[in-house]
Image (cartoon, rainbow, N blue to C red; front, side, top):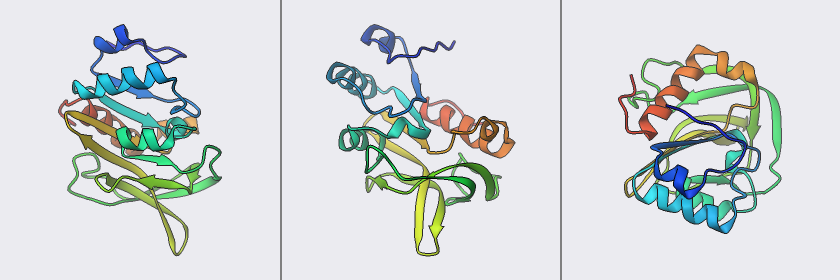
Length: 178
């Protein structure tokens, strides 16, 4: 069962939820009460998937502590166009059987990861600037999957991206990835 809303879920809604997918501009701009509710949800073992600019906003350091990464600037530098995704761990169940691929979407440059985050894919802005684009993060009983891509609806139509995303959702929700 899925439900959606154009607002952050209430505590009561999170109490009956296994997995929260955030797909919102400056998604980490949560109120203090929403932060407490999200932390409570994750502490009990809930899963989180953050897409595109859900990792952006003014609460970056806090969000990094729960999602394993953030953008270091509330107004990130965005490049749009062809992005090459390079998969980092071919044994990861999220990308097993998927080859590196290109897509037309956004690339954010100021990504800051927690040391415990496991990078799933990267891209490059220059030959010396390799930037994480997707990662997983586990903290206590919670699991988080983050993918920076998703600004373009065409991205979700790509079977290899969709496969990685659906596996990330299943993994974060503690379900079989296949």
